[in-house]
Length: 286
Image (tube, rainbow, N blue to C red):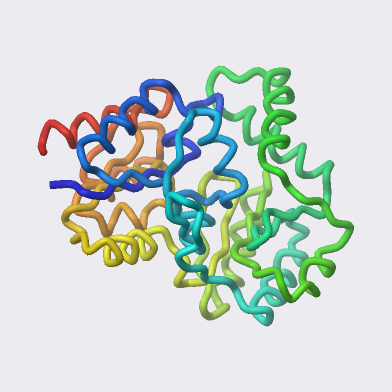
């Protein structure tokens, strides 16, 4: 019997318009009524998740920043795993070497050092989705940036000097995949970090202990739930760790085949309420 379910957001719970459909919302409420603890497990930070949930009228516990932070339903921080300063500086050196644009996900939100590159990156990412025209991508980018509350600084040194800010994740973007691949080769030599991806044109860098799968496992332990009683659902490579640990796992049809091969089941696409379909499959088995 499933008692805990963790779902990714982008490409999974969110459709191509970056919103939670009514079908997915109703399925989540149905799962909760059936006694299943439903939580978000995302690469986004909490400040990026809250507006999306609020728009859908939902209040859920969260695994955020790929497992670097976990919050209960009331918003209380349960645990946090940051990247230490020496490693942060080493990573920055490598990313700058390849002239890669990156953002810092921190304990106080997401920081960018280029408003122009932020807009260009977000617009390109949105334009790759099905049925999205360039004009619509630009409009969606403006709305997207309003919701994300990204903080812009002239130089990341401002952030690094602030001892009250913990660096939780690097989000790196490039349309030149070979640059990401070359950077990854050097990043692989740095101890205590893990490099994943939520799309072809990005990589995400966390502390090695900040992974969705490890966070799901820890939440299950806190709730005294066995991993066989856990279900997870995701669409991309930064979801793999939680798909591997759960007793029941679903990959989104819109995700890559490599992720399909890891999950136990494949559900419908994110534009076909794939999360709702997975929930229905779980409830039928209960």
